Length: 121
Image 1 (tube, rainbow, N blue to C red):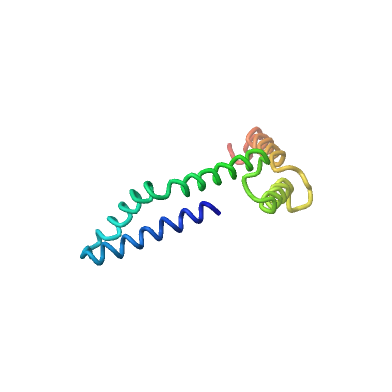
Image 2 (image 1 turned 135 degrees about the vertical axis):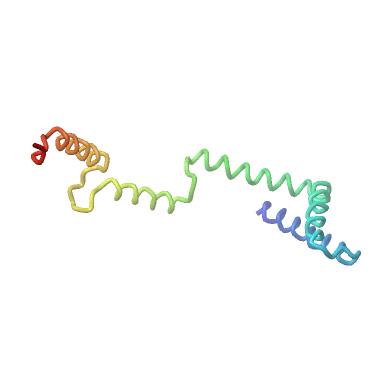
């Protein structure tokens, strides 16, 4: 939540500075660029506490993921595991892992190349 608060405050600062710059007379394409650059400088000076809270919040989330070992939510991890298990089986019901099927294919290709071609004279 601190990250959202910090982001909203920065966006509000950009809008306020944009309105002030517009009232001063800056009306070109340069208006948003100048407003963003000024907001960056002003937010660095004024929003230090909120920036620190947002950084601590994000660092805490990263540590939590490192402890649990999950990159995504539990539902996404479960779905990925189910898909992985389905990929490891063949649709025809032989239920052999895909890597075993690949090795069988390589062996059959080698057997075909070892047999003499009957069409050659």
